[in-house]
Image 1 (cartoon, rainbow, N blue to C red):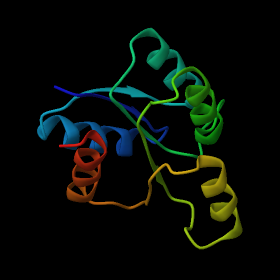
Image 2 (cartoon, rainbow, N blue to C red):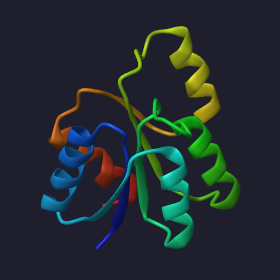
Image 3 (cartoon, rainbow, N blue to C red):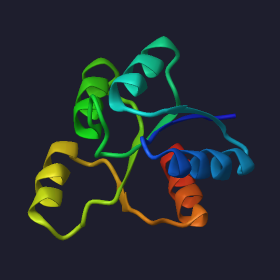
Image 4 (cartoon, rainbow, N blue to C red):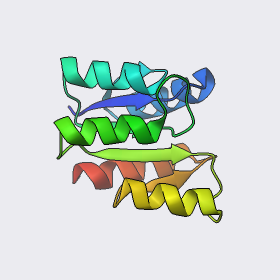
Length: 121
């Protein structure tokens, strides 16, 4: 069973992602900011990290960069409310180089489908 870390500061979204993925057969854990996500992954690496971008303490881009330094093969899916057409998105996409990005709101089917794809299922 694949282990997935959900790093999302909005509690209801975090719960929805976790419940959807658990219902699909995955083991999940939650973090509520980027630093907590890094710390949890360092203690016991996950198969996939589902991450928001706009979070307190350490944002998603900082978290992803830190994880990539220590775990270059880590699989990550970004789920964000940031507009996918603005200049901030273009800059973020360059920084995240190759990491798939889904825009909120997303359905549980879309989330599960993308997770399966990234895990090679």
